[in-house]
Amino acid sequence: MSRRVGVIGRASLVRTALGEGLEVVWLRWPDQDGDTLPDDGPGHLVDAPVLPLGDLNALAQLAPRLAERHAMELVLATSERGQLPAGFLNSALGLPGTALATVLAFLDKPRFRTLTAATATAPVRAVSFVPASTAPPMPAPLVVKPIAGAGSAAVAVLSHAADRTGWHAEHATDSGDWVAEELVPGVEYSVETLTLGRGRHEVLAVTEKHLFSGSLVEQRHVVPALLEPEVSDAVTAEVCAALDATGLAGGIGHTEVMVDGGVVRLIESHSRKGGDSIVDLVRLAIGHDLERLYCLALARGPEAVNRVLADGINGTPGGCAAVGFLRAEPGVVTAVQGVNAATAKAGVVEVAVSARVGDAVGPLRSSRDRVGRVLVRAATRSEALAVLDDALALLAVHTVPADAGAP
Image 1: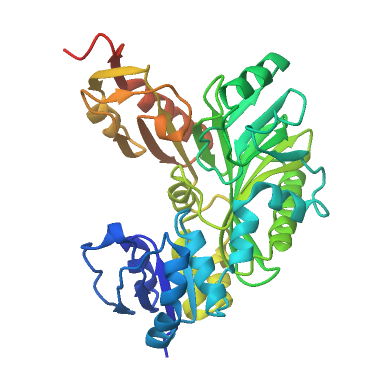
Image 2: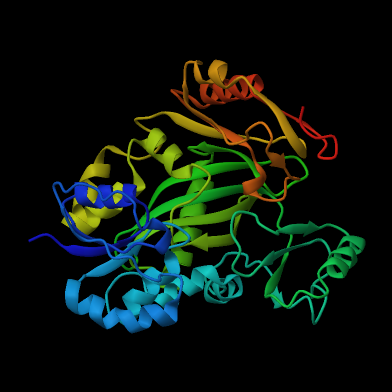
């Protein structure tokens, strides 16, 4: 008999779960009302109720009826938006999926630091604060970020005492919750994992990350990362210990670390897939889809996943995959060039430019301010990076200052 699971996410995730033979109750957000329902096969779409997933109080009122009607074994979500409602429903209904306490351990950065302090090789100093009450309670250089932020939004590096003073002057009326962290040197990586049970974490890929100059916004990612074996082992040990500390017992994980002189330091972690096309890079580089592997584990058990991965996951069979992002000068877009030429290059998997003529482009403050991406795959790292550089060089998003207007 097929397992019945609740799925919070896009139709593509529902199709993946159905494809692995699961019975699915698609728990939809209000903005998904009217979306086309996926076809069955080989699993079965039991129902697709639209629920107030963003209102946990309202969801609490509906949860008993939902359990009685559908008898789900667990609720899963692989996106940032779905973490809270999925964790809430698992805990409220006593289901073995990722619990609300575990979700909060990832979403609340100071809580994550506290839970992982005992296992971290070199814990990162961090202090929570409210700007309306106090300046960042740590000397420069430091990083400040919203406690539950994502996508580099509002993250700032305060390199000098004057930066710290200026930042607080701008945020002196902000009553939100923030965290101040020491500025950690080194090279940043993210670690893509699949947890198949308590203490059973599979590291599927390590992503090498590069930032735009003078920014915390990511410019490109490469899978697999270039790491010495002993550093790779240290990264794996650090991340798996952190996942154990949070209580994660199943699902996809995305953990960011900094490596400096062989020392691995935890930056933050998430009980979800990575953004920025990282799941695409993993699929292209190791030949496996993270969400499909998770659904396979739910449908047929961890051993089925182990059999699929038996041929190895260290950069084969796909070789190397990379993604590079496009930025533009702030202003109004007047022209977009090079999309067809970049798309036609051998090794380019996808070119996507979001900017359109007449759009306003703001300063590069978060990942949402980027205006396009190029996704590539090649047999080797050097080939992939060469293709990526050539394709990005063909692309241009032209702007004029906003007060000049578009022609």
